[in-house]
Image 1 (cartoon, rainbow, N blue to C red):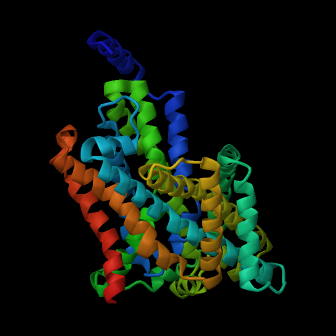
Image 2: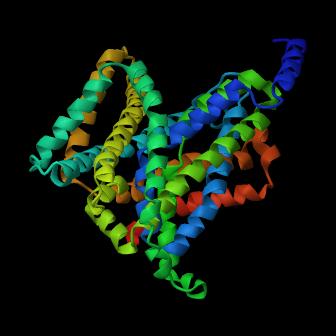
Image 3: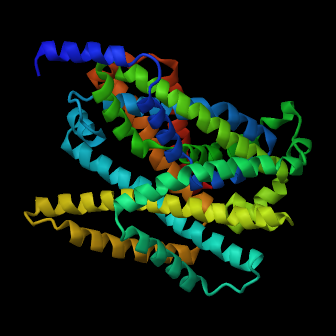
Length: 430
């Protein structure tokens, strides 16, 4: 492409980047919809179980934590020399092919544990619905989990386009219903978390630090929408050229303000409706906040609506993460086969991946490990490595990213990333 063409495209991009257009709004809603999923259903438990002050601290941290991290990853993708290079290509450009393979592996392990977590969550949600709302005796856990997972896998067999369409249809009714439930809970606010809170001077002790420390990986997980950032950056780079970074930052900020306002309103409404003891019981029962609310309140509306919302949200998130996990596992197997000089049959890879996913998700759902524990130990820390630390490392090492050096936000993002990853160390020594 000639310098004249680049200059013309740059001027056109500059003209088209003024104000907010339809494409910007679509991306804003897309980013918002990607982040708002089943992870939100577990945030009130971890956010509120430590009492009022850790919850207030999370409210203060939520917007900068989400915005600065995703802006850093967006800038990283935009730093590639090609117009349409995605995150894997940019990683290879800046760090080499070996790093590209490592990032692919990390992406798989960022998504796969979440898939395992949702297999546990959907089993527990349906089991709770059967026992508490329908008055039935639940079948043996191994049978129930297998039926549910095979049902979800049957939807997977319909193809990726069907899944994406189903998710896009479900996300906004899910958000509207979630906000409706948050408003509906307002008459049930009891203020127990406020009356039981210690004085401000006594609050910042070891328990506060521990609660906030372990809650940060859950926050990272709940607000994460890193899988869509690469597509978001590439699309806007093609649309706005040299102005893409500023435009992306504005779109991200709008999406994140909506995200934090709605999610934290839902979190506060749930927490104010329960006591710290209730939230601890929800964590012990290993169920989502919606399932606990349905069991806790003697109210037919909540008892009927809450488990259904939870089932829709968890199923939507399971299907979305399955696509990512399948792509990651297929990519790893394909690279291994090509290195050995063997042919790659995508249909065969899909079958191998499907069998592996069914067996492992079934086993984990039957065992029933702690969902929040899985987020703290696996999901949050690995996402933090990719979303928080990799872009900050690139700012220090990659010439195309040096212009972002020296910002105070870089230190904040690095600190949050290290805190999220250190949760693993805490679990090992605790």
